[in-house]
Length: 417
Image (cartoon, rainbow, N blue to C red; front, side, top):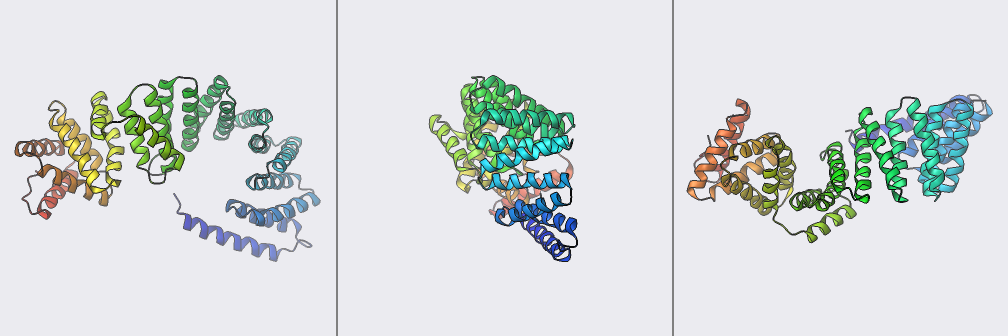
């Protein structure tokens, strides 16, 4: 993902180039070049949220393109003007502008552009309080995008339509539209779109009293919103998943999901509040919850379940992290039948961690192990040693070396092998 600072620098360079073109091509001699540069500059301003700068440039582009008979470009400027009006909160004027753009594209036989204008028209109509008209506009956008083979855009139109249906209580229709949206996003390889559609579909299933179906959809949304790339969205879906688990009566999983949502520092405040309220309703111990979940899962799922918990431990204060690691090792000792598989799953997560959290986890494992009873220390060394031997030699050597180095730093002989 491109850093924000790099994007800003690139936008600054592009703006400077376009401003130079405006000066180079006076409108009296080069109207088309001037209008094109004005439209491009307005687009950059719009993407940066600089609406006051964008609107007059779009008006200039619209007027010039119309004067020279470039109706397609004139209609595109009209669409961008509608977007600026909508972002400025002027939904009534945005509705009028998008409706004019959609009609113009229809007359020009430009179905994809008409679809985009109709999509934006639907959003503006909903914001202006005309949900029925919004449904019509979004349905048209969906049909036009689909006919043109633009699956991601068709999915977005279906998702917005389904979301609006849900807000008006038309749950069955919402489920159908959102299911179609998720299907199209999946087919298009649009992960953010899939995450948004599956999350909305999960909410629709909750509204219909179908908690198990909600769990399925929220779980799909979690996968589409990776924690490392879309942390706020991941936190939101985790909080929703926690509610769905609560509804199906699986309290350990509900608490686990709520804690993982709260652990994300960039989670929105309503999301954090939702997760906190659930934990207030359902008391329970984090370590017991984790082991309960692992006990009911097939072993091939353990690494995925542990991965997010380990990330939560890494970001937690040191005392909390030590308690969590101690709880896991106690659980490992108490489960001789699955101890090696549990240790292997933990190691598979450790070796993927970046250096700082990896070092923190290694130090925590050493500290907690040293506090165990002597026979339990031997047991953990034996189990973890056998589990490490199942990994590639470089990974095994790195982990053994790290564990023994942490022991040495604590002034104790290394017992890992």
